[in-house]
Length: 549
Image (cartoon, rainbow, N blue to C red; front, side, top):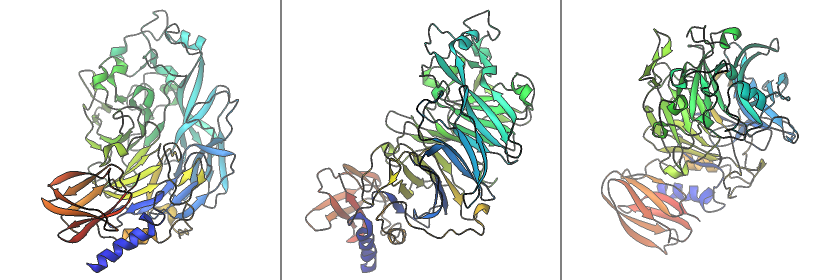
């Protein structure tokens, strides 16, 4: 018992009381977390960081302060970094909206520039995401500017919709060896409208679900579709994209030629560049209402394949960070599209692409603690855990399949500058678009120096990780978990059995008896003074928690 108390006090002294752990690593259960390294490319600064589970920097790819993320970075199996970036100063840019990019670079492990591609002119601009392909090529999202005259010519109702300029979408595949664009898909080739019979794309929206209604009633400031994620499936030779403004995901056939991709014929699917599949909001093709909408302004959409064995039951599903699942919470969804490999198509039921619901919904145990209306992503890990980033607050956490938090981290930056441990951060201080965890045995790390090179935060405690990861998951098996911790108003206690317990403050000034029922119990701590408290069960410390305002 004394040994357990000593461990708890060590944790407290190393972070929770003396310079409370508010940024960087917040909690860690090493035996239940999936080991690996987190690739982090936070906003408002130029560097890409590789961090270990303790939040220590093991490698960094620095860049000049004149650059900003544009917005993603990936680490290839041979140890190359593929990153996007754009100038810090965007004033006067002919195309600019949030998520704008401009440049894609390939850098070696030592940060030597090997290749550079730029697209940022009066007509087109890279934005949001890229996807390295197994053949070495790179898929890139591109905004394409359309004038009001071009909109009208394509059947856009310019009386109803007042934009002077509209940004549609294109996907280009670039070969770094030749610098050539070797494949291209343009959304503008796949529009439909039922407003102007004189236009060639006039038709019935409801019976042409593979085309996109140019008059779908989403009012924007010009970034019409705002494609914020792209993924590629080599097995199917298909592309997956996220269209947040329409609350949809789309799948495209990449087996087409560029010429076929401009039509509705060709490729393995036979539909050319028309949409093979769309999900999330069937109202976009007149097959549903607001009640049928399943996702809201989603980010980080991708197939669950990388690092996942074929035997895993979630292999091949689609992972979606559903930003606006509710007014004050976000969630993660795992989805199984109705794929028919024999007919090589996604099947509809009643003219609607299913399924009716996602296979699985994952939320933070304290539901409202995960809310980011933009940014963010989630990654399904090989051990079944889910790594989740709340992008607006720079808050990362890892959940086990039964919903237990086993790792937490808060990006320790404010407007791109490192902050001191103990600093309080609020929404938008440390925005981060995406995080990716690479396994410890990832081939990119072979022969590389991955020793700890300090914490990202300043004045941090280098011993905190060791002490907190050594705390047993359950000192007393009768109490499974407490969350949130720290807490300000309510703290939830999960108990396995009905239990009599005591809450005692560290200095002994407060003592309260509580009865814990099996399941989730809510304890009101709003009247508790700030500080450290112990939960005793059968005269033994079961948990320590902190109250802070």
